[in-house]
Image (cartoon, rainbow, N blue to C red; front, side):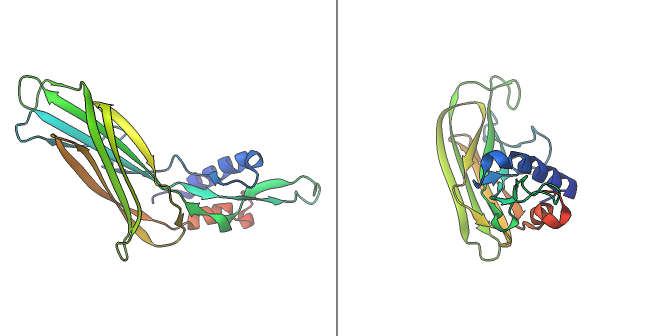
Length: 208
């Protein structure tokens, strides 16, 4: 994933600020970090028209790796050893992925591919699979059939499984379907390395 060291350290600092309230509980350090397909801006989407060019479905997918960790208690500085602090434990780093799907359904009213409206309720089906690139083994899979959804919307689906750090590269396969309109698909590559977070949380850097 494309992350600058500055961004990682900022996330570590923000997470460490929450640690006293979390105690030994798991914490999330990077909920806001994601990979997007198609690449681009906030509203960039893939699109597909029906054969009669009167109906269009658009889709966007975001993969949230979701770095998680536990905290440990350490004594304060030499001048105030009783001032304990809770810091991130690099040994407990892991991933807890989630999948975010966006869609838009449009209908042409008079002219093909023109004068479109986004109205009514729609059945939307979202699906994603996270696979190890080395052997194509399925690590996480999500599937939801969303009934009576607005023509424009989003749905975030938790993966429900932890992925160990440094287990290689993965491929995310995703799809958004509007029955009768079509299915949009895509793939993303993701590297499960936790090295940047591990470095950021290291006490040798004095950042936590």
